[in-house]
Length: 153
Image (cartoon, rainbow, N blue to C red; front, side, top):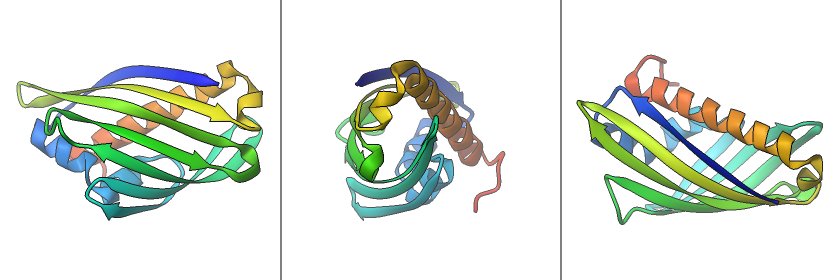
């Protein structure tokens, strides 16, 4: 089952600060819903352990993310895949753009994902709703950590 999400958020911080935060595993770990571990393997690779609940299915996903930073600091692309055991799998990518606007940063993204296994059987409306909620949660928390309106762990 293929999904696509598009959204944007205005963050009250300069673009360089937002870009640096998007590359900081500690900040990302705080912002990713259900993130238990986030390990930087190299400058362009991360490994994560995330627990997610989608409808009645709760699963621990182990995944890898690879970044393409060739457009820095105006944006970057990422590709990732994760396995949740019997719950299924997810793989996909995202394109993130960062546009400076009077000392603030407009962060826009387009994300695509393909899910399979037990999760895919839950239906597209439930999965899309959960994906939107997780995405909104991530960017709201990320903006709060970047702007210092939430204390960092």
